[in-house]
Image 1 (cartoon, helix red, strand yellow):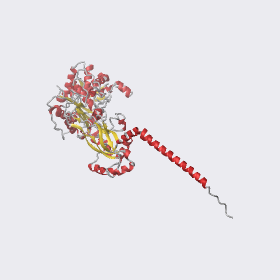
Image 2 (cartoon, one colour):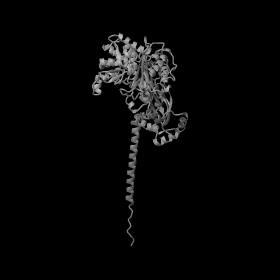
Image 3 (cartoon, rainbow, N blue to C red):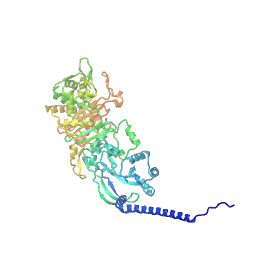
Image 4 (cartoon, rainbow, N blue to C red):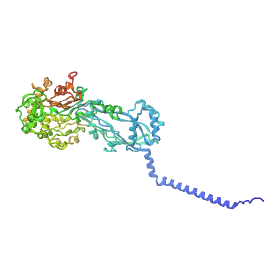
Length: 629
């Protein structure tokens, strides 16, 4: 018997098909309605919004960096310039695989690990959309050509031209001018991010940092039309940036470089000031370094060489070096003694070669082992008699000395536009009790009276003190800026924010003005007297000099031992110091000089300072010391 066969129900199948078709049709119609509704929403209701977004994709507002202000010396010589620089930049939004792109670029231009590391750090910093990030600076013409030929296969890659800082005189002025460098994340938080939207550089040190707000300028903007790859097709509208203001400094480049030749091969610092105005004529710290290395980023090799050098070329000795002023501070101590009545200019002190507070007590030695005999104020300054100052310092104690030193700016930064200047501290009874938890001893006063012990000063502070003495108490604040220039070659105009930045210290007013003459006459005797410690240096001068030599100990010497420079390591030998101003009748220059481990102030520092004063006052820029020191 045949198996049971199910008969097809064609009528039911027809109904099922019809129902399914209807459902599918309805579903398709609904989808069409949704699509039409979405299109209507986008094209009609949201038309204005998306049209604006589309226009923004095609038309962009881009910041335009201003030209940084130039810097000139007092004679109009260019000290800091701007020059074109070509950089390789990447637009992150247009790059798919960043690692692959970097690898391909590495075959076209030289990229080291530090370049890539810095690029990745910059990539993480805050930035605007479609803002390029620099990868390499200072491309050569060949590198630019290779990158340009590969634009078609490297979307998001560009070669951009901008102006970067250039210092034509290299290492000559870095400790005075400072330098600019790549702006970092911390610095971005401290400036107006809108005004720095197109700026990659900012002042890092010195004048470049202090006058950043003046030198930078105001950012401009341009509205540009771009293609799908973000490349500019044309500029639709432009608001030009306002360039930075040009500055004219009081520095004299010729004097600066001449002083550097005198100090070549030495660890030294020199500051020269015009006493009348407080303008800094030269500010030298040797050894130095080339600031151009830092502008677009110094290599690890170069930086490590500077950082690890035992001569510390990165250290600004003129502004931050703390040295015992030694005998160069004796004119101020003498003024304190005269003003307090502890001694008069005519009083004589017996100098057997040492000084004792108590009989059989410690002997404080004079630099001259057998002593100077009977000495008065003029002799004490001329011959730098330590015992005379021991006696005066012991008699009056620390308080008058500290008060008088404070009037000359010791323990303060009195400069107007030198942001790295160190303040140090003013030794006093209260200072020692607060910082050392110890009382002030008579021996401390004796050491302080000859510029040793706790007292330290920077070369800038020494030069400032000398300028105030030259002005007979009238205070001038050291400054680097002469004025701003409205146009190249024009007359510098005063810059009020700088002039009003810091209150001028009170003039040093003495109870008896005659004390100025007595002390200055003693400083003249140093240079022109028959017993002066620097009489050989001042003998042939065509003008009168008031000076003071100094020799600062670097390492202690036993009480009964004799100082022997030859037996000491070079870096343990005494520092040579010298301060002076000239001409005495109408001072035009005040100089402070420190030569580290240079030996005697009269034999090493004074001749160098004399060359500097000759150059400024007589125009003699010939180095007569070459091969002699």
